[in-house]
Image 1 (tube, rainbow, N blue to C red):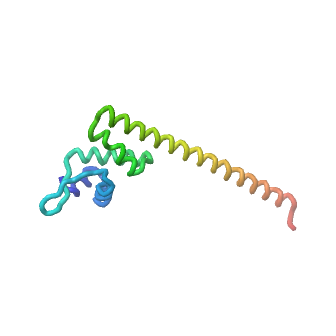
Image 2 (tube, one colour):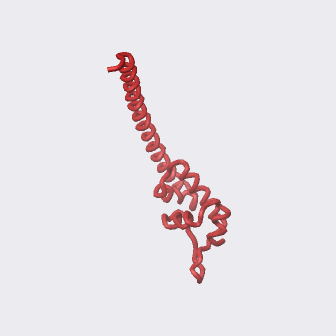
Image 3 (cartoon, helix red, strand yellow):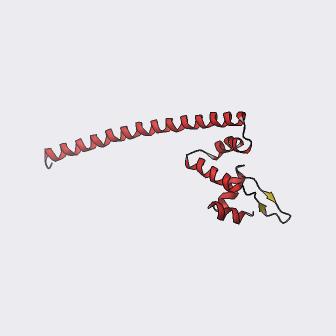
Length: 125
C-alpha cells in the first residue's frame, strides 16, 4: 500500500509516517517513481508504535524494542523486556520527582495563605 492508504488505515498523518521512517521505526520500499510502499503489517506496526509513544516511550527506545516484534524469539523478547523495565524505572523516578515538586509547591502555597491571613488579621497599615 502507498503512504496515503497507510495514513488512512492507521489514522496517522503522512507527515508522521515519514517521521517514523526517518527514525527507523517504519520501513518502506520504493517504486521506480520513488513512491513509498508498505506491507499490510505496517498498520499493526504503526498502532504498536503509537501505543509505545502514548506510554511515554521515546522513538529512540522504540527502535530498540521493535526487534522483538520483527523477529520474535527469546533473545529479542528478553532484550525488549530489559529495555521496558528501564523505561518503567525512569518513569517511576520522574513520578517521584513530580511528587517532591508538588509537595514543595504545596508548602509554598500554604505559607502564602498563612502570610495573607496574617496581613488581613493585622488590619490596614
